[in-house]
Length: 251
Image 1: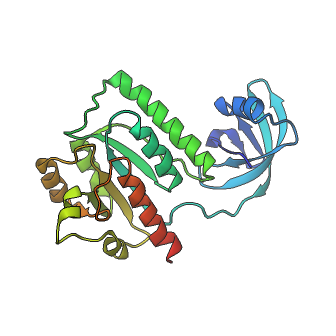
Image 2: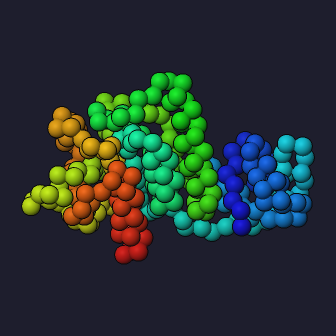
Image 3: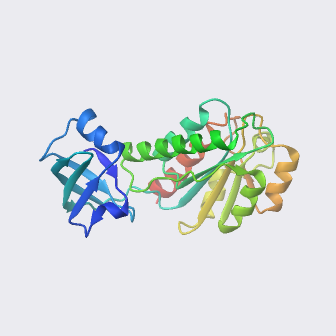
């Protein structure tokens, strides 16, 4: 059943829901739904309801909830991915697949070795696209939460915002070559589901020595993501898959 996220202002006492915007085109033109058809509406508070279409009115659709759904689809632990800006459209892939794998939020950041350089106009367009990707991926994977992409951070801003997280990790390729590496599984065994994780992934070329030192000074712990060197777009997906397996399948 198709799923749509509806803003709080469009819910009327849980009795009527008004769907607007691009979702109207998707429902009527792409899915070719009509009065009497069913779909799922997600409330911003995490609830979801099976709804039936009552009316197709100009640029909006009126639906009625007929059953509240009991769903457990979100990761039991809050994981934010801080991703050093990669080249090309790799960020699109990271956002889409990372959303499918349960990331709570994303923080793209400008690392020293990030080739990408965007002005404010380009950043605004990119953020609009990024949030569209996470919304569509959340709908496709039947999540009840859309991971936000609020801004493009500088490295300093990333360090400053890291203070609000309980566990701070950064994937470091040198750990894969080290004899004294720390296994990701050992790190995950020490984490409680109530804690908030910030996981930092470098861009192509990895971190500079200065960035590594700054991350450690800010309380980040380096981890090894297996014995092989992963591409920047592979690393967050490996990490999220490992976290999902540890907290959802082994418990």
